[in-house]
Length: 583
Image (cartoon, rainbow, N blue to C red; front, side):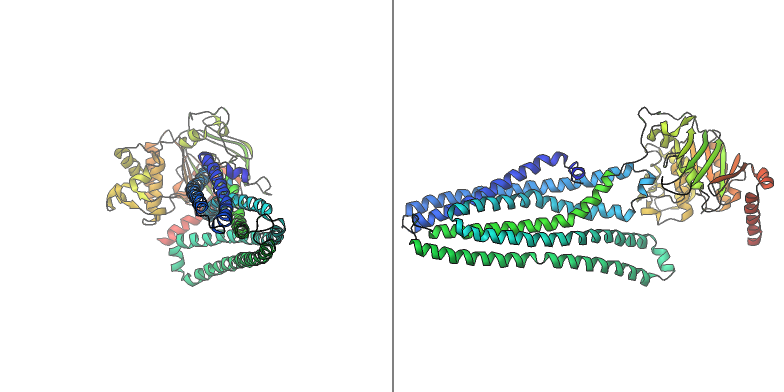
């Protein structure tokens, strides 16, 4: 995990190293200051020598300014390095998500990816900032302060050495108890974000079924789980401060008592025993050591919180795609001919059932192919293999006579346009959404594609026409309008293969027929694959494939299938009765 996360440091490695160096310098200067204070008291104040007071005072001022400069520079560079590290992490995660195949995306929910990109990265940023500054400064302060303290008085130094060991054990137990609690908290965050996303996306459904109270209860239940887990963790972490304060004051009292006895016994003579200046330095070092331990306890607590976040971020960064370019890819798709040769497919290698079972099909370039079948017959799975959204498990699939696994992914997907069952429009203008198909398309090309998709008329009626604003997800237009815009966007790619996955289900039969005619007239070279529920959408296709349970039940034209395929005949007759019943 650490190695994976460290790969995102890149240009901020130098800043991180410089922060560590400056933190060590800052800690070293702070160690020297109590020694100077001791000299000022013993050789200046106690002896009434003002010249020594001025000398030590000047040195203390210089040290204070040096510590201020080192601390300020360290804090500024540390903030920049940690923020830059977090920015790199977010970018690396987002970039890697863009390479995911559909099988990789199936492993992570949308809510989980959002949580990892936001909350988890923020936790890592905070932990890293504390790590390269406080986690360096704390141990350096503790080791140096202990070393100098032992040179002053070994007997008294043993007191807070014993306290430090005891306190360190207690702090370790606290941190160890907190770690699994916060791991659970971030998993619950995923569930919370999922509920919010579902509710916002399905707001119209929630309101139409009067389920607001149920959704609020669901959200409240998950929120309460986060509250309970956080409260448990924070109760443990809350022990840090009172423990540190108790031991700090206990240590100071013990040192003061033992130091006072030593000073009285030695008559405040440096040659005979402890001096007032020495005692002041020891108290300062005790405070420094215990403060450093408090800082370290905060660092450990933050690391405990962020360890779970680090693992979750590393999971996304380490997730590799099982679909990648071959070593010497083919960069041009010669035609839209599609051939399935004994194709089998399953979503996971451990799955018991094949999604597609020994498929043999051939779609000639320029043909219109219809695909029908009941729910769960694997129609969508079949066509998603063509642009390599998934890879075949067995057999081979060729486009233009070349196995799709031998193509450059960009070239293949540029030649295959898909209008999925659940297509997305993005926030922006109509024109910006259409140019996803071709970013260089001119206004005439946009309008032509929209006329083919029967979208031009409703676009012209929108306020602003092609510059009308589309809300995220296309929520401010109807389902049929959204589908037609998605079809127009796909047409702008000028594809060799056009796949429509039930993408005219929200338009009327008249508009559906007009779109089909436009395809036949204006896209004669393009192979058109249409998945539909209505027989009327595919009855004029060059061939119709009937799917059943992941197998090809029949292939033929409309008239042939009426005679030879019971599934097709049953669907056709039921739709005919429904149409007559509506009349």
